[in-house]
Length: 362
Image (cartoon, rainbow, N blue to C red):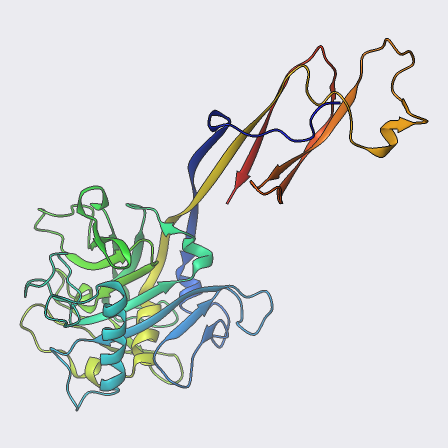
């Protein structure tokens, strides 16, 4: 009688890693509120962020797309600012998770040039776009993130008056990404020229594994001089101009005087399109189950024998025959861990040898 179990040797097991990518488009109609009155935009009583859904969020079919929040650093914090404590808390909480602490134990501030612990490129006023795991999966693929925004002119919820549209992206991700406590992150530039091109500037950061985009509010003044980011009024109509000025400039009263929810509304209406590719890391163990000519020629099924005779043999001199339908993978202590089913039974007798390939994904 053939053995019921066979040990797998080192050469019988192969581990592989496969990266699968999926294109994710997010249109401006979703972020600006597809359904009237903005029933796919969920607000909260704490007023610290807004959530965007692809359908009215009370629907069972709704999928969470991303959250939008606004925060400012301690460099510009002031007791006269509206929701100052909340804005400071949002900034510090995101910075703690994404950037961590410096050698002195202080929270690192977001830095648009990616060089930490210096005074250059500090982003004191930031919008945080936190994408859901449903979209970014294991991570956002490098050099695929693009965000098209209206960065000049007055924005309204009817689309009128929009003047200048610009595509932000991690154009230099192949050479410009770095590593933080939250994983890899890259610089977001205001144009495809990337570093070294005086016409473009680094205006934010994209954290690939965390699925978070940090956008400096200065993007709305890069190269144009006319601030456009807007805060929605209560009726969702025309919006108040808000912007972080260039280096050394004073913030506008609208930015300091608006709530996080109002700033998030303005950011949503300025977004025209967001696209990126996500990444799914598929790890696999491939088991080559080798069946030699003298193995597994008999079945362990009780119906294989009737009256002490093998039912598939007509004469005693006939070769034993079995049909392989299932492969079980066992732990060293003989605990069944996984079962693989063949698409159809495979005939096995002493004249044949087989190698069955079992793939276990996780």
